[in-house]
Structures are given as C-alpha cells and as structure tokens.
Picture 1 (spheres, rainbow, N blue to C red):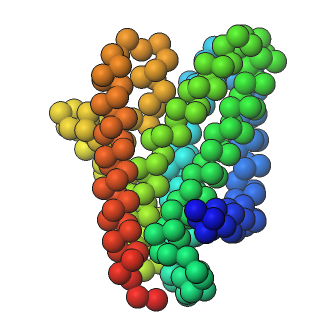
Picture 2 (cartoon, rainbow, N blue to C red):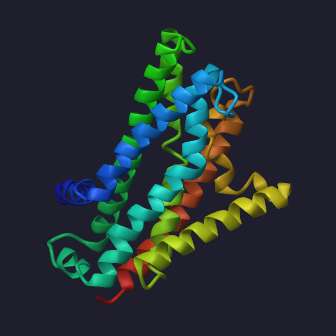
Length: 245
C-alpha cells in the first residue's frame, strides 16, 4: 500500500508540474468565468442559462472537456513515457506493474477531480453573485459534481487500454477520441444499445437529481459502469504486464 501511495505522489507531481496542465486549470477557470459573465448579460440566451448554470457547465465538461483531459493525461503518463523510454526508470523501481498502473490511473483521476472542484467553486460563486443560485442549493450541486467523478473512471481505463496499443502519444489521443466518438455515435444512431453504452452516462448526476428512477435502476447503471471499468482495466493491465521495454 505504501508503494502505491508513493507512486500516486510521484505520478501526480509529474502531472501537475507540467506547464500545460497548470495552464489548462487556469484556462478552465477563465472559461467558466467568461461563460458566466456572457450568460448574465445575455440573460442566458447562449444555451447556458444561469438558472442552472452550475449543472449546465457540468454537462458540457463531463461530455466533452473531461474525456479530452483524460485522453491527454493518459497519453502523457503512458504512451509518451513508453515512446521516449522513461517508463524503464519507473518499472525498475521496487513497485509492481499493477501498482504502477493503479498509481497512474489514480493520479489522472485526482486531476479530473481538481478540474471538477475548481469548476464547481467558480460556477457556484458566479451563480450566487448574479443571484441565480440559492446558497441552500449548493450542497445538491456539489453532490452532482461528486457523482460525475464515477463516469470518468471507465473512460480513463479505456484510454489506458488504447495507449497500450498505440505507438505514440499523438496516436493514443487520436485513437481515444475516435473510439469515444464512435461509441457515442452508435448510442445515438441505435437507441437500443444506448442503455448499455457507458458513454450514455456521462451525465450520471441527472439520475440522482430531479429523477424518479428507482434505486434498482440507479444501482444497475453503477454496476454497468463498474463492469466496463473492470473489463477495460483487465485488458489494460494484461497488455501493460506483458509489454517489453
């Protein structure tokens, strides 16, 4: 357990110290502020109404921005290190490949959580300042952001799996984006398979907030996401374990 903790610290430091990820956090802050100000002056007529600003922003992020961030981070921590050979220094440490994979995955998840929390704080402040959000509703909004962490897990594992099949960080990102779009498109074109496509649940918070779904249905969805995560993780680990460096 201590080796995993050390691995998480190492991989998180590696990720957060990179300039592009620092700049990305700043850009996210500015983007949320910009959309909030524009929405206020246009009275919400830019498809991001301030009456539910925090949740509208959350939908945009979980459907588009979070997957892109995941694909970039996975490419940097896996494909790029495999491409430039720095992964050799990692696997020579007294830590198993299983622990390395888990450490990198958790580090990426930590960054995703940071993005969501920063977005929650800024969007909530904007909502309160512009008088569109009541303070009493903030705990429910916070819960929506916490719940939205879960759908990112199978996306992370899928991207890690793809990175093990890619020869470069660029191909890892492009292939991840392509496969993600294909899965989403199939869910839209064939509604019958939409219910079993994990990409259909990026807005998982809607199942809990203002929803009349039964507890059984919600647990089924969570079980589905967990199943996808397990399958993708197993495939990624099998390839990572056997790969020669």
